[in-house]
Image (tube, rainbow, N blue to C red):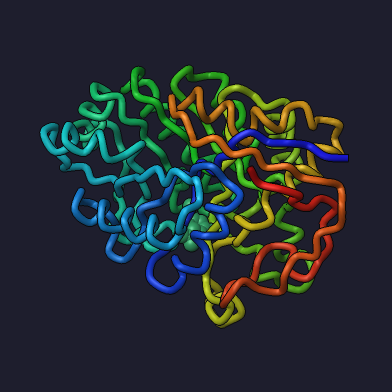
Length: 335
Ligand code: DOR
Ligand code: ZN
């Protein structure tokens, strides 16, 4: 049994820089046709010069793979219109992080309210630049995304023409928000479709499943699964694959992030098959994203077959999700 995916896309990806970039970028570039690249480097990407030199390093590290790295800037409330006009041709979106909420987000925004962000958001809306949001408050960890819902509502109402992507949603409340506001969209990760907090901390602590936003309750996972399996037209796959060295994960003060890029298509295919939803996987991993972002990725046919795939223990210094496990689907060919 095989299934072919046409130009699979990862609409939320962390590629890092330097040695880590060289290890992880080729893994994504081999099996995906394009990805939205997150800007939370140290320091974050806030100028076109820095963004273009980062893109050059990405392109250099992926060799001749057919892969579109779609770049993003790190949100700042004082970007002016002229800057954004010139930035527009270099980027696909701008990513907003609440200050300090996750890895390398110290330079993010404190106290998000539409008025104080109006200069940048107004110009983005006029120019048609989508806003990507890490939507968490600084409240109790299990409630952070739910609490952030009020901010999503304010932003969606204040800027009705701005496309806002709720990144890596993890709750049933976020799933409902999609229906309430026309200009809200969402990415969903592989891990949030598969795990709940129980898998992270219900038994022995699993550092490789620790991420932000933290995995939530079974009913939240169910709500995300419904959206993904029906390939709701406002949702798209974004892995949030976030590599950290093994030493930073298996340590006192575990870094947040799950590394899924090289195993995501195999695991997603198994998940969609288990739910008799294989006819929707193409929309979830590519077509919806193409319509939402208005992008045309390079042609790449990835064929998966139902044949055991032994997930490596590690890719360089990074331990993937399902390390040393066997998945039911493997990649047969890439054309
Ligand atoms: O778990 C996470 N890791 N969540 C994020 O939002 C950022 C990411 C990272 O960059 O490591
Ligand atoms: Zn992320």
